Image (tube, rainbow, N blue to C red; front, side, top):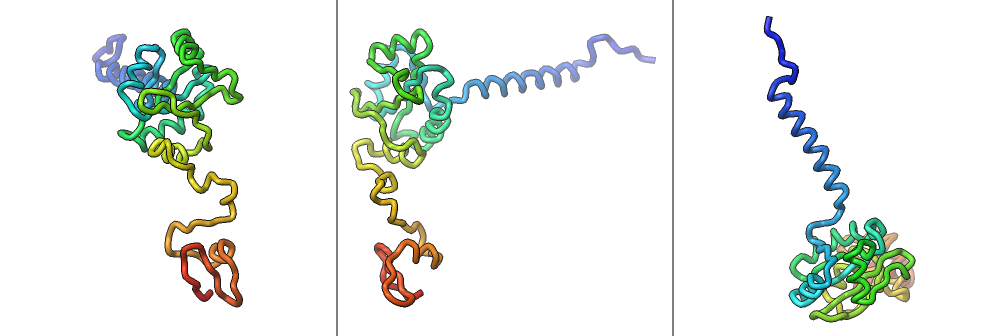
Length: 196
């Protein structure tokens, strides 16, 4: 009868090591939560270099490591979409290095209610504070054209306007979006009159 050594087989040890490694890796990735496309900056020299080398930079300043979690998740998706056209950076004003940087650039995310502030830099200097809605579509449009107008959906006066994305329109959507002209016809913006 063969006796087993007290450590087990080498294959079993390798499997256990891989399992422990995977669990550890999952925990590390969950703690990071930041896309590799978002540049984490904490040093003033690195920040100046980033602004010098990139022409279109949106920077998220947060008061703590976790206060910007919702924005970081959204900005990770935005960074993927505008890769090559814009850069997104993150400064944590809660740690010692980040606090020094925030003080030098005169940013105080503590004064904001959400604990985060988004500032845009264009051609190496401050351009504007991001004050549009914090939605994927709005942020992507802003980074693609920072000097351009806001999206029409953001205009509160345009709430009654329905823009149709495709040619296939259901009648209830058309009648609620258009103007009724008599029996059975609806006029839509940019469309000819069609019988219902």
